[in-house]
Each structure stands twice: as C-alpha cells, then as structure tokens.
Length: 182
Image 1 (cartoon, rainbow, N blue to C red):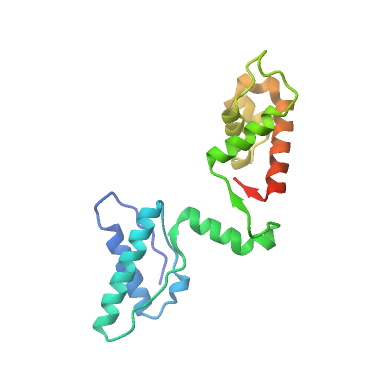
Image 2 (tube, one colour):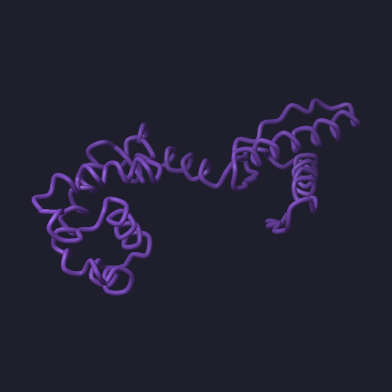
C-alpha cells in the first residue's frame, strides 16, 4: 500500500478517512507498529488514535476477531521526532535521557549565558535574550553563517557579531553539558 497524505480543512472527514485507512491496513495484515499516523496537536493525535482504534475494533468484531491493537507511531510530529531521537540517541552522541527545551526554556538559558558575557548591555542596544535566540535559531535551522544572518535579518546587531558568537558557543556547550536539545 502506498503512503497517504491527507490535507483538508476542518470538518471535512480527515480523521474518519485516516481511521478507516488504518483499519483497512490492519485488516489486510499490516503490522500496526509500522503505521505512522501523525498530526499537529496532542488533542488531535489522541482523537485520531482513539477513532482509528474504534474503527478497527468494530470491523474486527464484525468478523469475530480480537481487535486490541496498539499504534505506537500515532501521535504528533513532535512526539514522533522525540521518539526517534530517543531510539537513536546513542548513535548520534546523545544520552537517551536528554531533555527538550521549549522556546521559553531556551530563552531562559540564552539569558543566563547572555548575562554572563562581559558586555555593558546598558550603554548600547545589545540584543535581548529573545533576539539572541532568534538569531541563533535562524543560523542553526537555516544552516547559515552568523555574518550572513546578521546582515540579512538583524543588521542592527552586526557590531555584536564577536559577542554573539561567544554567547552561542557558550549556549551550545551548556546544552551539551546539560544533555539538552532545543
């Protein structure tokens, strides 16, 4: 069976379509552990998994079969990503008990690092922790060099490039030491 991507507006039957697709796949002998069923929010993921389980149970009961199935790869995109990272942690140099920071936690750590740098942030308009995080994120996610990110998106911060580089190096080191991902 080929992969299926469903993109549609609210109330159009996406969940029902996917629940029936899962039931058909399992009914035809597909291993439920090999079905990747993802959505964006935990609430939608829980509803999708519940409805898929219900449809499978109903269809199996009609045939007199046991319908108890688990869908270990049903959830959010983020939860699946975290699960993959935990499964492969050793292979990519992580301890499996790593922590994933949300944006607020990352900004808090960035603020600690920023405040520890020997820069007089009161004399000039040094970037806030949130701005430092935005610069760092843009550089890492876009695999773009710091000078390029500053030039393109944060030209008012160009003069702080050496300090920002030092902050980002310290931030990265602290994440490694604390076994944290962002």
